[in-house]
Image (cartoon, rainbow, N blue to C red; front, side, top):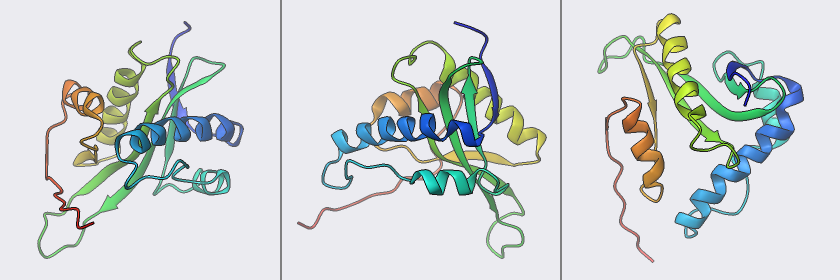
Length: 158
């Protein structure tokens, strides 16, 4: 495999991004079919429109010819806030490494890069949500140095 590099997503990446969005949602659908539909979080039009939004940057890992992973981000600026410290958080809204290249270190490269990028942009922290039905993802995030910040609980009523 060629050297992996990270960059902002481009219009030519939309098809690959849609495939990755399908892959990640399939994991969630299999784990929680009571909550998830077999669909994608965003439409191709949504992805295209988001690419130029600096408050919702999309980054891709590429080997020069193929998109191998994506990281959809959201800037969450808590300044000013009467309760919270004056911080800016980079929230990872969606992350996926292609099922054809998982386990090859691409996810670690992508996450290390996003941590470095966020630090250079003045973010206080990087956060994300991980579903309990995806223990492999949770183990991966812990392996790259992330820790639990809060827990969301549920009680199913029907």
